Length: 450
Image (cartoon, one colour):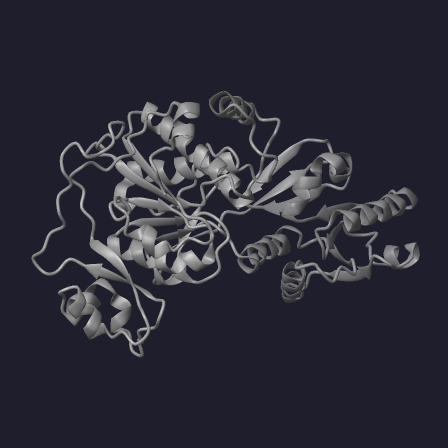
């Protein structure tokens, strides 16, 4: 379903964004064809009055070595050479639609935008934040035209890609699901469209497609950078790794890489276990160097247990200097553990930070409630703020720098989600923004950006 700033959003937001593409717009392909059993390329081409070469030009995968036509595949059916798509009669567009200004940056959103499940509701909130960014850019005199298509988990992405307006976008935000990433990435490259993949996606499209901006950082990449900065920043500390006996934890990606880096740099590292008695636990700590404690799980119960053990240890040995290094998930527990996070000089690596005490955050939340008649969902990160930051960063950046935009310069006004991209070798751009949220002993909170 194509959403021209859907009616509910328009009414709630009163965003005056141009979302139509105009009656004169044309498509690159006339339709999609679903391959049936025993069909051949020659037979399909003949059916539509095409040559096999014309069919292959519209479907470059056909030129790849070993390509086979398979039942159930969808292939693009182009217009024959010299044949133009029929012009849409004047006046056929809905009365509410307006042609986008010639200089407008055409933004497309291909995400699940529905109320059927959590994915849809979160992405609808993200979309609202994106629209709020567009509203602010328009107030600055910028020209932006936004169209959105609902692409749920069971959607056939190929059917969306042939809809009117998709191929005319300058930038597309999406998809949410990995199985849709490959086709959309190829489509963006083929049509010269910038593609912003905003959330968790598996696959290596960013490494081969120069049009892709991949916001999501894999655990390996994220914790690899965190371990590098840890090993440098805490090179004069005694590192205490606490095994929490959590077989479900995926944080071994971090602690394994960290221990290897510490060994390479000659940094002292002790390993202890959450089940050890107070004596065994204490022997892992240094009375000479400052200590920094790292758990191999992000779970709250184990964190609480280790904090209790640290309270007992420092109560008996107040001369010990102890800091704590955690995980992004700890931000969800910050209110509960705030005093102890500050007591133990805690550092949390993250790619976002929701500061509930910020005036700008409070202003944004009030504005969101006023426009949409409800509060943002209680998630970390806040999806509306993520959408807003992505809109200001990508749409604002492309309006300012056009094709020269590469995402390498971080905007200083991010509400929650700072971004900074590095170009991959032969591919697109990967987000490498990393920061440590530091809970200081004086009960202040500071952000260390890398």
